[in-house]
Image (cartoon, rainbow, N blue to C red; front, side, top):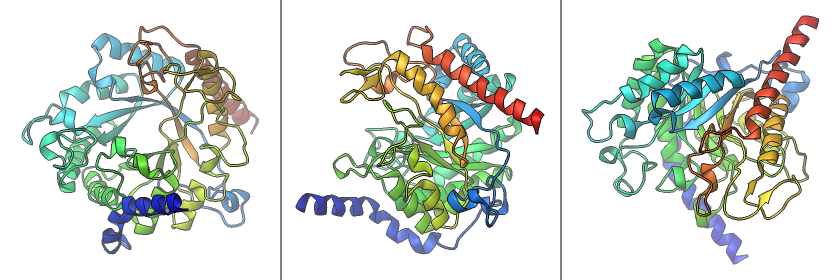
Length: 413
């Protein structure tokens, strides 16, 4: 009992920064467009089965697919970048999720701009007919919270207005190149990506400063919430549950700033379509009592789309690999099971009406398979040396099968 009470108190402390923000956010909506206006989300039709269960109107949905690259494309050679674009086309994905790191563009001073680092990514993607989803995040030392400025790029900014101005300039620069969709930060509900420890109020303040800044430069901007890590609230690790974090943002009125929610439902070694008594991370989208869809509806955002901007499975780590979905006490999967998960990811996402886009993380491993290597480096469809894993072909085939089925349905209808 004492342990549960302590956990509750610490979790409350992690969320306490939100309290001071309530007055400034509730009832304020500086957006030029909103999901409630029918832009970015389908309004529910009263009486429809879909509106009753998920808040999403019955529609002839075209699920879209993407690759989540993290911060790798920016640093590729021209040859590597061209190969990545070719692979994206072969896989049949439309979207590339790429970090647009503030620290990369203005690493040393507020007067420094190294936009050319990201220009080449956008230019390469557009030349291949691919859309870019920049994740605006990560703070240069000169602009970071002094409590963590020297320790991590995921340190939040000391001044939200400086971050918002960087985002405005990015939108102004890349809107003419066809970039209109933006994600504001990554996984703000866990300490590894919000280094002072997750703070709903502080993130809501960043969101409220940044969203109108982007839209002032690009009225057509479509904004995503920073991708929520699918975790339980764990005070010892400074994790706040994705559901708790989303609900608190809703209570503060901060969800009015965005057009869609971004979420990271990793389920390995289970398949994403697995049905359980307690609910997997995929089931928590719309099939559990306190699902993301239910939370959105509770706070006036019924019908807001959900983008799965990361999901996948690693093929290397210390520990034991899972080769079946019933495996226990494993840290990663075999390449065969990763391929099965890739196929099932398409099937599972297609079965959830609220999901508009699903991204596989990631494109290529960023380290060789050695004993000390972390699993976060081995989610790729290719090994570090460039060889394809079975998941590459499995994902591509699953996307083609979905699109063929969609096309046949259209011809029949």
